[in-house]
Length: 153
Image 1: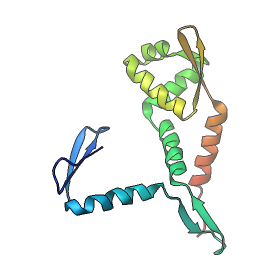
Image 2: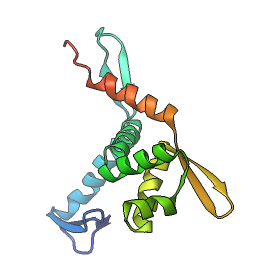
Image 3: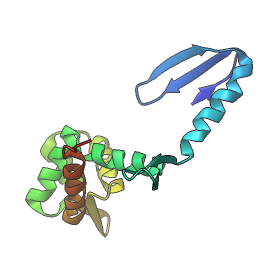
């Protein structure tokens, strides 16, 4: 979030880390900074390995893919997945009781796993049952293997 309360000073709030960063810039340059961040939405175009073909990389797709990989690379989410896999079908109540964490923490991490489509949900009345989406994890594992391969450049 940007705060432009005083001219010549750009304040950036990073809510995830609860820190505030002050950047001193001339006030006339604020519009240039906004324009540069807006251009990140434009695709990246690079020349292919044959030297002729153009490859277009959608940076928002890369970001979504990175968030999916990060969803699996968290110790607590790994434990959640192991518990869900072990029992087959689990409610959030069973998960937070077993891991001895707050219900809100378990729910937040399950939401991240849901957005990454790593877990599936099924509602029965007031309860939501979580199961591991093995097909999605197989896709992610294959992608990670492909990315981790050493290439000859």
